[in-house]
Image (cartoon, rainbow, N blue to C red):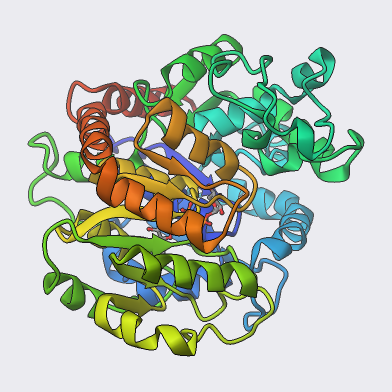
Length: 477
Ligand code: UDX
């Protein structure tokens, strides 16, 4: 009798940061559902937290061919990890990648078919190339953010960059093709806000993004109808492009598809690295339908004391009910995140504050009308899928573009960008919850339907994921 052929073996290699691990683990899970053998490289810090808070042990035992390879991220386990530590982690991971890949690729029982590497770990392309293993790049940001970074040289050539000070921020940017109608200087990724074009971060982001063309293919967690014109532009430079998002929605439709083996594997939980406080769900259960604004600024952003206070007042003064996620490390100066004394009564009456929420569940809750978000890409997609309008307070990097997509491309919310005071917070919250509630809710509902269609059988992302799997199956280990 013939020995059955071993399934293709894919190494999935994200940058060790929650936002990146989150979506890449979802992709890895989908590939495992399709019968591929997976080795997922995870940092010890994130892995321990996923074990504790996201039940990954139970989830992944459903796949006997799924393994985690645990590495250090270069920081002690008890060290805080915020956006400030990004470069430390990046440099450390770069220093160990060659040896790590050599070790994985030389294991005789698990020949490697390809590597799906985080698109910002482009050094992987060289190391894997030396070993004869193809690399597919996965950028975990929006197509728009990726494309804007790709267009930085063009922006410089055309004079769109550098930005000439604060008075230049509202100038329209014309050199990011596919986004000419929506981008102003203030909507460009935050690294573009520099007077000196030799700025290290700007140079670094540009180089990394251009390097992505050397990968065999590019994966984006977006879908064709969400960012159509931009995706068309990206295709001109990346013919082998897989737009397969929103991954978490995809997940749900694949699980309920009749084409999956029966019984289906357990439903995937969110990839949370913090302890979820479910008391907010009991609180939401007691609120009237569509009466609450959910407020969360993601897993790594920190607020300064002044903005924090403005949010407290803005939320209370809006008169709306709110659920706010205040992580223990939410304050930049480390100070106390306590409610200002004179607001305590109002907060107790109509507010709920937790350290970490089950965000996807919260966004789908009937009591939640809108989302005040920092516009991280995962949060944006989760809100899109849940059909919730947004108020955006972007902090850095890709968030500036995402918030502009929300307000001006999709028209499903308002963008506070660069101005944080209590009147603005109050006005924006009442905009999405009051005056323009119906308009935004209708547009958000349409977008949610498109997301569902894209990730259902016959949809664009569904088809592209199948194509990706076929492509991997056609590669020889
Ligand atoms: C980072 C960057 O900041 C972001 O700009 C980039 O797009 C992705 O990487 P992060 O800031 O954590 O990510 O934001 P985001 O991408 O929105 O991810 C946050 C995740 O944490 C979401 O999946 C969200 O569901 C989850 N979350 C957040 C919770 O589960 N509970 C919470 O209380 C808050």
